[in-house]
Amino acid sequence: MISDKAIARISLYRRLLMDLHKEGREAIFSHDLAAIAGGSAAQVRRDLMAIGYSGSPTKGYIIDELVRSISDFLDCARHQNVALIGIGNLGRAILAYFTNRRPNLKIVAAFDNDEHKVNRVIHGCRCYHTDDLEKILQENDVKLGILTVSASGAQGAAEKLVDAGVKGILNFAPIPLKLPRKIYVENVDMSASIEKVAFFARKGK
Amino acid sequence: MISDKAIARISLYRRLLMDLHKEGREAIFSHDLAAIAGGSAAQVRRDLMAIGYSGSPTKGYIIDELVRSISDFLDCARHQNVALIGIGNLGRAILAYFTNRRPNLKIVAAFDNDEHKVNRVIHGCRCYHTDDLEKILQENDVKLGILTVSASGAQGAAEKLVDAGVKGILNFAPIPLKLPRKIYVENVDMSASIEKVAFFARKGK
DNA sequence: GATGCCATGTGAAATAATTCACAATGTTAA
DNA sequence: TTAACATTGTGAATTATTTCACATGGCATC
Ligand SMILES: NC(=O)c1ccc[n+]([C@@H]2O[C@H](COP(=O)([O-])OP(=O)(O)OC[C@H]3O[C@@H](n4cnc5c(N)ncnc54)[C@H](O)[C@@H]3O)[C@@H](O)[C@H]2O)c1
Ligand SMILES: NC(=O)c1ccc[n+]([C@@H]2O[C@H](COP(=O)([O-])OP(=O)(O)OC[C@H]3O[C@@H](n4cnc5c(N)ncnc54)[C@H](O)[C@@H]3O)[C@@H](O)[C@H]2O)c1
Image 1: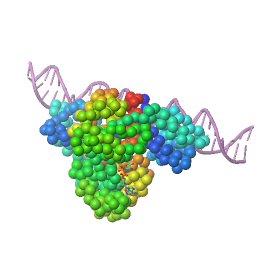
Image 2: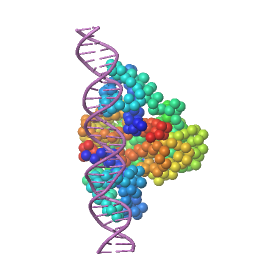
Image 3: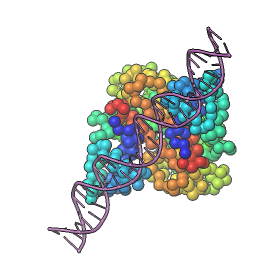
Image 4: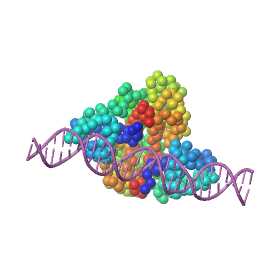
């Protein structure tokens, strides 16, 4: 099985390649992509090996073909719907950002338990009360969730998502979730990130 | 040298331990902390070995002592000032969040190149024009930066930070920065994170 | 049409991270 | 007092990830 680090890099490659493609660039060598992505050429080649795309030793990788290969590998055939739980500061920022960005992943519904936030439309996304979560998720075939509720609500909200059939969660709350093993959870721990920066900026890596 | 993954976990341990301390808990065993933090007992013990704190085989780790040990290890003696560049949706969410949260890391100034955003005070933080960045950072002895500008502005803004003496950057822009090796950069790539979730939720890990 | 050049793809080696497993230790209970 | 017990700290083993290094092959140049 491919590592999650590799998937993150491949996702980054795609984004960078799409930019290059827009600028009219047609092909790229592993060491150039590595320089742009901040890795090594060997690592780029290994990652691309995993997705089963072959470049040519003389031209390198043909950018539009490679982007397509990455998409075949990463994306689901049909697009996947995403729910966002917790329409606070961070949740709204994420809503604004993801709107019309990745065609393959679409935030189709947002939830909060604060009455002031439900029944509004924020950045084109309808907001519901968490009480309606299971119903709305099943209506929209949602299998992915982004969790941006406060720490105290995170575990409960995550369980609601799982009960509603969600298979993967991107968790921004600063606590680990206890969920069945089969649910894939990715934690984004910004507090740890800034502390890492403070530590290594001081001590050197 | 200690790994950056270990630092992230240690930062998480501290947060969890502080919560437990508030709830009145006095001591904890490695396997209990592991269960809460979502890791293995052996890993907890290894991590704590790195910071030089020893528990007792019968009581486990004394929580307030351990928190102090972690802080001695992670934190700078004096608190460290942080600058935030890019007062957009994400920047404001981060400002709101970090205000009065970590006493040791304080966002003391925010910057943007949009005239509408400068000279305001957002969540208690004064906003300046990026033209004044170097001056303000040196006046406030800022060595850390959080970068939340749009992708197109990220490289330039990062260079401004480095010129102003910043040693570590937490980068939310979706492109890798090209900076001198000695600058520590931590990238938070939310797009890659959600694509990871989509991938592994579908394929299984 | 040979030759040199350069980049790919990939086994193998190296390095990094995690887990195993157990001696050492202090506590409790008989 | 002593035996049984649970947990720590840590060398060693294991597993994961990255890097090395080179055979292979296409293309330009002579
Ligand atoms: N904003 C940041 O920069 C930042 C940084 C690090 C971590 N986080 C974490 O991200 C999460 C969100 O942060 P934020 O700044 O947006 O917080 P916030 O307080 O602005 O928003 C939290 C939202 O969650 C809602 N909520 C709380 N409990 C809920 C529940 N059980 N069900 C449904 N909705 C619920 C609240 O009504 C609120 O709208 C928090 O867990 C926070 O710790 C945020
Ligand atoms: N919001 C999210 O959920 C999210 C998710 C993933 C990545 N990001 C990334 O985080 C960054 C910020 O996202 P956002 O949603 O806050 O965007 P935003 O457009 O709301 O804010 C960007 C801010 O940066 C400022 N800016 C642009 N160029 C600048 C420069 N050279 N100097 C100073 N200020 C400058 C703009 O004036 C604006 O205020 C972007 O790079 C985005 O790609 C955001």
